[in-house]
Length: 254
Picture 1 (cartoon, rainbow, N blue to C red):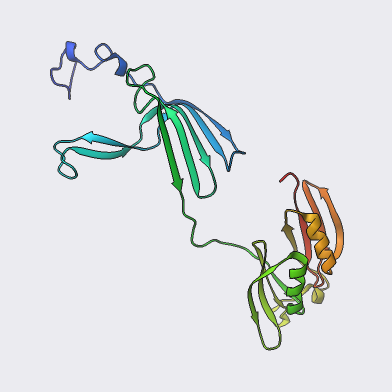
Picture 2 (picture 1 turned 180 degrees about the vertical axis):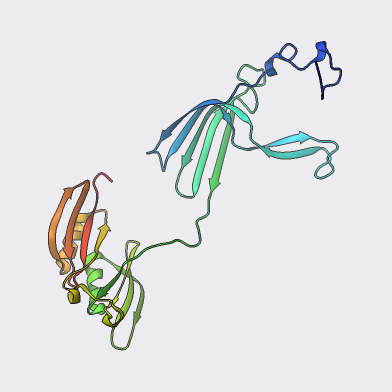
């Protein structure tokens, strides 16, 4: 028998199962995870013996000269036996809560006591977000701005107008943004009216496709096909007075 760190080493004082039965071994990590995708943005429930949420441990350290001469605080993970729920509340907030038998003990030991554990974490948003927005080329941009306000309830986020009345506008429909300006054939930007048709369609996803579709029709848009359900969507299609095609709808069941 060899001993490296225990004083009075010998058969009667050796470190092993015979002398120290309740701490003679540490059960392996064994747990089951159950995921609930429809709770908030996802919830995981862990049951069994697992690595804990990191905690703060106070250790007696009389020879510690760096911090206190008596106590050293350390942030460590422990082993817990219990239940832990982790909930993704949104893109920034995560909440964890659970109950265990206390840190680094087994359920059958004398010092096992019910203990609560909890953690709240917040991740900051990036200061810059990549986005893609369509830029529509039209004839008579000022009139087009007014049409989209009437048809979709759009609001102006940005507007630049020259002395001739040509407008560059950034519009928002409940946070969904797009741009428009007069066509500029000299730069290869043609409106659908000049081309005799368009090369793209725009999908406008809204809570009530029927109401927005009717509003667009009342503002002067022409119906391509009425609102109906197909391929998991409730969707209708119109063409605006400037030749751009809009599909207005939403996924069924959202």
